[in-house]
Length: 594
Ligand code: ARG
Image (cartoon, rainbow, N blue to C red):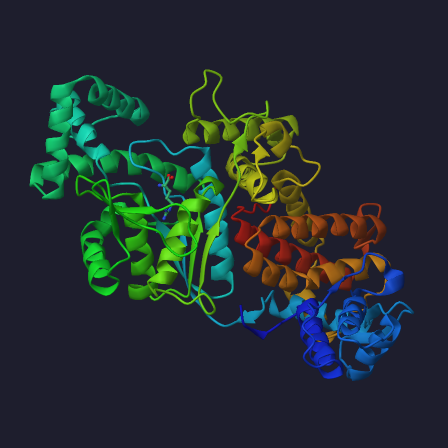
């Protein structure tokens, strides 16, 4: 991303300041900048550790300089009056320690309290996110659940910085398997034209038709005829196809509604004609790319070891063909700057091969456009094996979510919340906990790794879970709500104090973490690793907890408030708003009361 304004991001601003200083002190040295937070306050808040690698690089070019001298030379190039820096010290080994100015923190927090949370301003991009993307008639499984949750959160992140986001469901709604499904539909639900059939178990329907297809020659022939009729758009057959798609989509929509997911279908069937055009285009514009092998037309994109099958021997198209057509459409017609595929890690080779073809065809430019596979690991059961029901079937997503709702209700009951909350409050807390915990458990694990699905763990109110965060959030909101201070009085206080009197170590620690939201957003925009945001908000909640333990916000005597520390109340307010901003990006529904 190109940053126009770092906002409250200190790391981002430090990075650009240090890059410039290093370039001035040691022009043309290609050494990556090492700049990080320091866990030990003795060494300041941030530390630049570039001196050693620079000294090493210099040595390789025949220049001998001690890291300490390198550090001092970088320091000499830094401006002396950077508004947020108290002091900079250089250690003998060249490490450069950066200490933040307390007054700067106090001003920034006051600003966040009066203007609300603003994220860094970045150059707007047009971004397509291909996510969820289940296959029709095969039920969505936990793999698709991961794609749905991660993809939605990535969209939310992009939307939060003002990108133009296309949320695309590349559903598997086309292909020869529809022949057998349609033929089977005619037999099982002859009345389907008048009434949408109630296929409660589409998976079983799929299996039945597959079985007949494999065992019954007559049925198989009929299935093939259906494919031909579907491809020539015979009206009734198209209706049958639509019927099957509708049943499937209706089911999926319930899942999306539960999870507050918005997404638009642009599935494989969208590319029917475009695949025909694509093959023509390749033959005309890139002759020699396609080669014939056993009746198939295949291609080996540059640097790829496996070929793409563009046309099958029977003249039909494949998953490769539709992905090629989709890539061309997205980059050329839709003019996307970024095209992000949230698909399980198992499809990496397929996607990388498609991207290589796109580059060979000149559909996009790697240096300015981002076409990327955002892969993820498997969901495992508590036994460490692939997630399955007890009888070994794939887990239906709706069953999984219903179980979450039930367990969340039990959890609230166990905590005695029924006594203090209305039924409506309880229900919304229950759903927020149930769906929030499933999402958060997924997002908080390093996306590229497998993770174990465990309701017990995700519903634990200690540790890095949605439940812990939802409680923390509700508690902070209730501090402000029950303080007896009116919003306008707090606002008036903040207006009068453009620099809040923060000085307790716990206040300052919390304030620093609050300002890091901007860094976190920039980091995740680049990495698309949402666990980094989960780690950020979890750390924020624990620092708030420490602050609240050590600092009185409201001092009470005989149950009555005697002293209200307004600046601390403002810290509570900003903390709640930052958590709320993170919840929005992570797709967690916030509840004011838990
Ligand atoms: N429908 C595919 C599956 O379930 C995922 C599609 C992902 N997107 C893509 N453009 N290939 O495996």
